[in-house]
Amino acid sequence: MKIVLLTETFCRNMGYIYTLLPKYLARAGAETHVISLGLSPYWRMEEHAQMFGNFLGSEALNPGMVEEIDGYTLHVLDGRSRLGYRQMIGLGAKLRELRPDIVQTWAAIGWIPLDAARFQRKLGYKLFTGNHNAWSTASASLVGGPAVKVKNLLSRYIPGRIASWRTEKCYAVTEDCGEIAWRYYGVEREKVATMYLGVDTEYFYPTATREAIEERRALRQLLGFSDSEIVCIYTGKMTETKNAMIIAQAVGRLRELGKEYSAIFIGNGVQRESIEGFPYCRVLDFMHFAKLAPYYRAADIGVWPTNESTSMLDAAACGLPLIVSDGIVYRSHVDGNGCIFHMNDLNSLVKTLWDMEPMWVRQNMGQFGAEKMLEHFSWESVARRRMEDYEHALCSSGAIENALGSGRQNTSIPEHEVRGAAKTSS
Image (cartoon, rainbow, N blue to C red):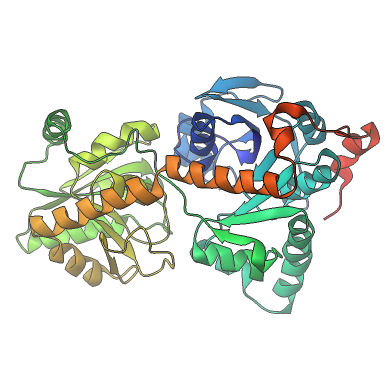
């Protein structure tokens, strides 16, 4: 089976779906290709350069580049902005060259799924889309008066419905992402399937071996934490929206109450300088996702104060109990291995941290979470379930023989259609 994944952004340093799903699809035996515009994650953020520095921009991803990574092939195309979305230039020609059996996009709206749906008619592959926009981050642009509704209808719902007609499934990574897909993005409701994001358990695993225990002890000593301290960890953007500073404030309050809590923060943002001013808090720069695992294992509680983060899964896989806010709708990754506090409520966070002081509470939650991540949230299991869906789509249409190597008839796209892809209207 030949699978092509289409993504606007790509960064080797981040453990996101666009680097890890292809890795595990390739390990499952599929010939896997990623076609990307090579943009850095969060490239639309005004403070992008200031926040991430060279962490995201240090790798050159130039149009025309082809590179082998972790068993799959990365292809970088040029792009252009049209009507608020990025469009891949030469996508039709690249798909004609690769002749995939399956094409998967991360988005359900925009030029990438629209053009993938357009070329699907000629190339005959099975198309799958997705939606990663959760209610906590997308609601501001979806809810409003008549002007907002008209804009959403024209720029999201209608184009999304057109792409959905040629789509097998749209993978929503949470239940609220699924509702947004069918309610606002035009995806046919029966085609929405919830499939959570994963964690790379090759790197993220609990402190269960002698080597891991020694690593934890040495790293805590290096960071200046004693064995008796309860260390909270937060990784990611330190923006006002993420509000990581409330963790530092909570640690300070607990210290005043005689409790040995500390915290480590890994990332950057406008709150970083303020957080660095709090005692008992250490702040480190962004780092490659695989290097984060020892820091999770050196900590005792993972805390994310506002909206969703895939880092929660990584921390849970390392055996950390989680604390998340009631601002998130999706809580499957926290049920049984974490606690909920009232978002941006300092007193609520202090009480929740206090409740996790007993070691047995943290250990029981952490063990349950690590087992749950391994069984249900590993990228290996996610890739396996997606492969089953891909195979079912091919079998149901009689296309499985092509996927096994017999070739596909009538796969050419007229040159005028390849050139005209950039003129497709949403």
